[in-house]
Amino acid sequence: MKQPCILCTFQKECADSTVFLYAINPILRQIVATLFRDLGVRFEFDNDLFRIDADRKLALEALRTRLSEAERSDIRVSRERGAGLLAALPLDVYTRALDSAWFDEALRTDAFTTFFQPIVDTRTATVFAHECLIRLFADRAYNGGEIIDAAFATGSIHLFDSHARRLSVRKAGPQFVPGAKVFINFMPSSIYDPAFCMASTLEEMSHTTLKPADIVFEVVESDHVHDVKHLQKICDFYRKEGFGFALDDVGTGSSSLQMVCDLKPDYIKLDKSLISKLDEPMYRSMIEKMVEFAGESGVEVIGEGVETPETVAMLHSVGIHLMQFPEWLGNTARYCHAEESGEQEHQQNC
Image (cartoon, rainbow, N blue to C red; front, top):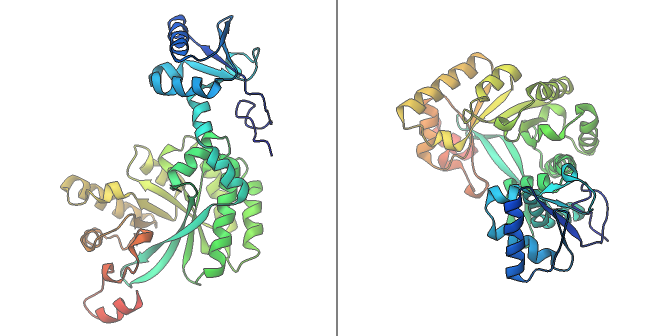
């Protein structure tokens, strides 16, 4: 089966290996020509275009390794001679997509897997929720950030986001424990129409015992959201359908607190990078104010990346009791806070 051609708007199949390169300024064109000659890359140069056939891979690798980032950003790649500069892809976008071929294969074969990371209510030493994390084990292990980057690079973020939501529901359903919630990530930029995009997720839920009240949709990289009005539309739809809503990485970017006010999420997550500075007076004061503000607004605060009993104690001291532990931590009982009375019972329940 042919793979979709990256240079044909990520859709068409194309077996032609010819590419055309356009270097925006004359000096860069001379640098590229010299580089190709030194490496023995066969090319034709006509009307400011480099045409490359048999040595395409060698040429692209040379450009990627020998040129600076600024120089690479001034080179465009096209499949057709007359495609025009505006229709061509920046070289970096093209090479990133080539590097992400593993992603297309994983999506085609449904090779992604899931892990469930516990969010613990440390006051009662019980699991409050699980966040579903998407991972891939292929030629090596790929983390969530790498998978999302590849989805963007290959132009498949809409398809992957829908697939990931359905996969999360499918895997969570058989092991769902009533009373515990399931946090499922989503990319706001991939959801153009909330009702239409949610249809496949609701269909997947119909095959499980999961109800909307059991699921919390969590924005991935909320600080990178540029269209808050669009995200507000998504949030309103989720609430109308009975789902919960969470913002991640609150406090790590300039717009996060404003987004909390605009979106009024049910949960906010404080990033590990922020929590790690709790012992610094200024950060501690800021986090205390955020917790106070959240409490007044009816928003639950969750601390992420909690790995030590010392971190648990510091979070308790500022009023944070919901904590997310890494999936590799195993039994979290020894990390859970117990009240002065009933300590043994709490530890047994964790």
